[in-house]
Image (cartoon, rainbow, N blue to C red; front, side):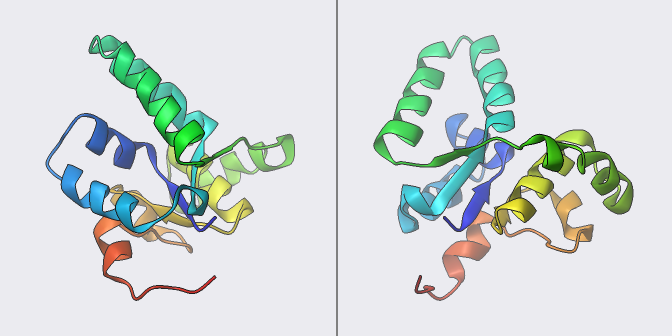
Length: 139
């Protein structure tokens, strides 16, 4: 596992937004076992898709991502959850961004996101386009 894929990246693809093709290219270049998604990210994805009357798409997403591709689902333990307020203060992040940051830090993952707020953190972030352009890394 190498990358924690942020909520906005998944939604870009699922809602066929402007950068959906770059997300598709990123996912095509990386096996599911190299990717992770937080449990926390699942909830807004589910909320948004079901509010748009796309519940079937949400169910297909769960099946494709976890059962077919083998993307790992991460849940923070209490020790890591307790770090969120400090990370919020240190980097001026909101709760959901701090959650993602702590998850990436705890599992030593590169955070893949379109959210520029991560640029002011120590770990930073990469966009799907940036990851695709990098030379292949051997595990």
